[in-house]
Image (cartoon, rainbow, N blue to C red; front, side, top):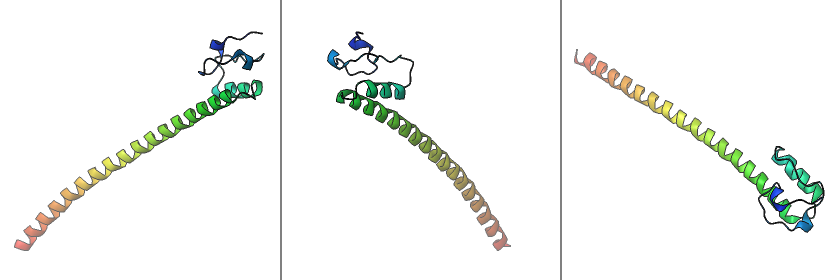
Length: 107
């Protein structure tokens, strides 16, 4: 079975055809994990493929971390906004209480 370099499931081109073994081609619809598993099973001695899979996993993890950080940032911004509204309300209430106090002291 001959496999072209362009049909490999990773973006590390060109790969010498001596590294390509039968059964390596993975359907494009399979998940990243399945691609990495298939790659490691068929080409266990190929360091470039192992590095590629590790980098793809790192990218996936970093994307998840970035999304988590964005969610956290949004929650913190919301808390700040709520605190600022509460602070404004408290200042307004304090101002009114001071005016009431001055009015009562003048009587």
